[in-house]
Image (cartoon, rainbow, N blue to C red; front, top):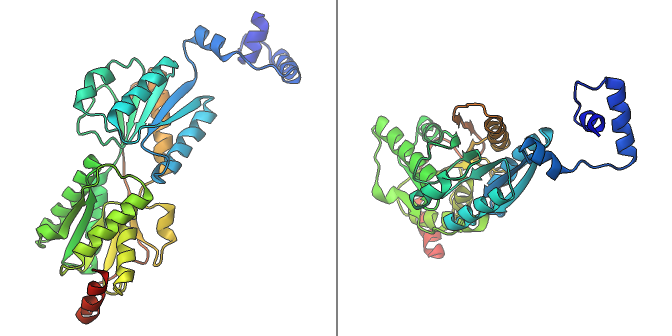
Length: 340
């Protein structure tokens, strides 16, 4: 039995010809290793749990694909579950993963705040937080984050370099950490260039539950209708879905993009290249983010010390940004009355 076991685990104590013969026989017989027995021996189940907000958020499709591809290469299984943006549900999912004896957990866009800190810190397996939205830091956990401050600055600087001086911001309230950083970046660039920051140019959607394409697009439409009453020439949107909603309103109001109004998003979803005109946006390497989170979790499972990862976004210039041009006030007035 010990010889077979060693051969199935590629032990160097078994010669290569013997190992290959035993493995070939095992394949012919349809032998499948007993994972429970293996885990009892190694104290590892070779499985990880991944919690993400919702299946309707396209952002996480590539992230999860990156996690699963690397996990498969490392012979790890991945259990997936959604939190629906509910911190209590997220904590219950983590506890369920722990009962299943997973070797580690990846939390994407986690919203578990300080009331749950004690329970979370008691989890005895490695935890990686990917783009955490919790307004509290957990020093015992490893973080993988996008540099939202850099991304926000690159987006607004692009508009400023094109010549825009009256720039708005459309944001969300249900992703507080990243929204705060992108909004702060917007304000910093505006101040650096001695440009006005007008209260009614900064609009935040207060829907704390929505987190899918339709919710954010509708929010973008509602916010854009308010913003376009103001004398702005461009807008930086928290994400692509808000930006797409803004583009739809511009089309309704006969405002030409980018000739009369410039729009820039954030995330670089696949959909951003399918709208007309294609959306200028901040590219987040979502697949690579998933792979980095999984690789970091594997290092932690192996007992290695690692540093937090901060990933830089890049600017993807497409068809929705251009130097400012005076918008037709007559056309806008007629269109505005029609929308209202």
